[in-house]
Image (tube, rainbow, N blue to C red; front, side, top):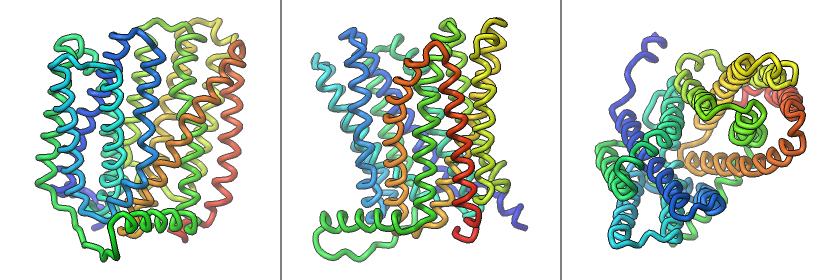
Length: 418
């Protein structure tokens, strides 16, 4: 009987949220890509291009505030309001563009404002999923939502590059504005259960008090703290491998052509989407106490990845090295995506609804903070070992073996904590 329940379609409200997410995230990703490309075109300065991306990424640090707001107000209404505000901001930007005001400063403000709204928007979505789907389908639902995010990140550069060349920045801004507006309209038809919580005093100190409660909950709950540490370590050790390491290896070490570089990076991105969409299949096979085995698989896959860029393998020709490297990268990307979504799901199951937005946002913010730190470390390490690029990969493999041992020890009896 349980299997039959699992095969039922998702609720109308969850499907509406997914459609809204798809439209909103694609609109945001398209605009962000187009604006960064436009800055590169009008200034020709890669440093400004990089600085804009870095500044527009900073607001994610405020996502715990978005989590506190998501736990205090109607989450459906928040999604609608955030999308309408995004649409309004983009429309105002279009008006400025139409009168010739296209300064880098204005573009930076727009990108930062949209990133700030996104940081507030994401916790409302993640906290709503457990309210819209059955508990036994949470892994699959989280996989779909994460898959949409990954798909948008892949589609935006391709679609954005084509549209930018065909219709120009102004029309892309209009398209993005329409996307945000349509997303808000779709979300208006959703129903997300909401029970108004008692409020003592002004809303600002209430939200600040909620934030304190959220941080205290995470710190005091040893299981959730372990989940946050695992997510943070994965982002510190593995995410920069694909963001910094893979481009250096493909472009510099292997001397890949533009086409092969694009194919390689595209396949890695596709593996992330595939891992997210496979969660429905793997859901019943995942258990907290055996999570260390999934971490061990990553450690083992890093060994042949290091082998693929050793001198004697590179001397065999381009394609054997490229094929082995990409195959390992695909499997690692899928594995890490599955681990990440599973960790999100067990946190959702364990956290009370009134704290869910805050807890999810805190975990997201802490784990995301690890990415730029890892990128800086990897940049230095890969530059230092540029002549023996396989050594950093072997070091990462050893680090993952260590993480496997730690994960096994701290979660040996974790099923009883869930």
